[in-house]
Length: 362
Image: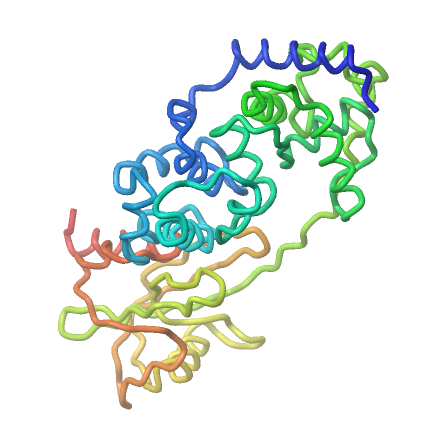
């Protein structure tokens, strides 16, 4: 149990600091719950500086849940292109549709109803309820976990259910009666800008005198380190198949990595394969045709959370066989200058830029 006097002191110090030091972010200018929901979806595993231009563009196209609900999935994914974790975009659209159909366009203001929105968990629901409705509901993200761990010397990192529950309970106990949204944002802001993972700026922290880790010089030992995620390296070959001035593209299956996005066909190299052997095999398996491989257009390296891809891209033509795609939801022949109308994975966007550059398209 946290002493009431200490808790009041913590709340006052943190909120005063937040009022003076909070960063200027577009979603803080209008506390509409839909806008908060969009920002929270975008900020999941994505840095603020990356999110800001996407958020601004999104709000110009989809300023309300009603506008988003009426948009096509392709249009929504195109606006998300480059942010990664595309299930977030699909769930955000599904949530907007749910709000229109189930709540007649009115954003829900209860934990139970918000948790019923696709892709919304306890953290996102807490953020929306506290920030948009000033409900006394806690949040718990990576930044908050780190601040709590250092502040109270909690040997927790939220890696298991018991640890997670203790952190949620602690955060709920700390909440003030009013300004809960600001308090939650202040905690997250402190973790993002001052109480950072390595070499935290303890001298600048408004809670330094209340922080047990700082007082005992143990800030570098808390929270306990998480198990590192092992990344695998993949070699991938892709084909830019040309026919009568058009390029073949296909739509990835919705259930799977980067589902619903368009791509150039190809796949992973197997042991002992060369780049071109891989490409011939993959195209035969996916499209049912044999290809003639021309010049290599580019080699591009791209990193994802769990793997790193080296993409080898070749210009190709169909040599024999009847085109019969079997590993996609849709496929098309499109002109190179039409490619930018479709949402692609970030690595494929590089290919499109090269094709447009070579064809003289601005």
